[in-house]
Image 1 (tube, rainbow, N blue to C red):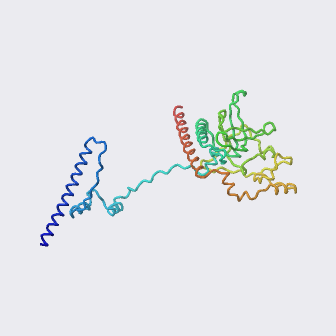
Image 2: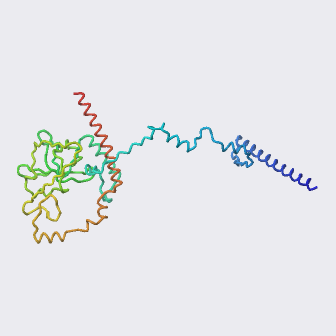
Image 3: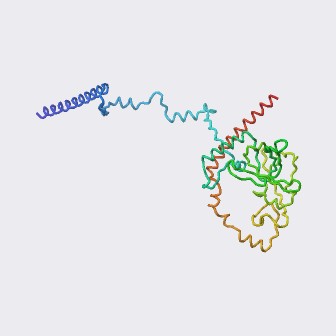
Length: 338
């Protein structure tokens, strides 16, 4: 009797399983029919997981595929002697401007004071400056270099004017960049300020490339005239290629007072030692600011961020190298035509 009851229960369970399967199949058919029909809101299908997989199906699923390579075989293949000479080629590194490039073209760096910053204006000015450099050759020069500048002058006989002098100052940012030349003409000191990107400038030539010990040479106004006298027929002095820029370490002896400024307070390196009077020593102590040498925030506010400086100089370096390559190609074409 117990065995018959167990058989009946087993048959009932089998019937319920079959009915569940038939119900699931019917739901799937209805869902497929509803998706094929033009109903506005079809019912979502529910994925039915079949846990009654046979061992053969499991083994078939875990079997290695035909195009599958184990990582050990891949490493063994890479380390084989047949792979010599097939190393991965390293990607070309991005062109980065050298660190000294900021001293060659300091006018491309923006004003470090955020009160006067305008990134859109800076971008447009850099574009205009590079376009101007594509038209006129602006060479490398520093304070202390001897230069010759040719500008258009409607009142001169040849409509151009050429001035030779020593660069005593260089400053400004963007299109407002400038430099000052000084020379002695007929026994009188003459200084001319030029806008670096002024359209009237027709040519800039460096006759002697060198640096001085100070960033500004305005003390030449109170020095003997021989330190500021240069011939207008001076021939350019060439330097070997890739040679460092020479530094002129000559020290100028100032004339007796009166001076234009109190030069003893500026800690200048390009002048001979001055005989200080007690009054001069008191003035130096009153106006001395020794804490500025240790003020890191002051130095931070007076300089541009390194990341921003690197990105700007890299952009300028790429554009300038492209301009130089175009200029060289045009020169070769002109030589071939001649």
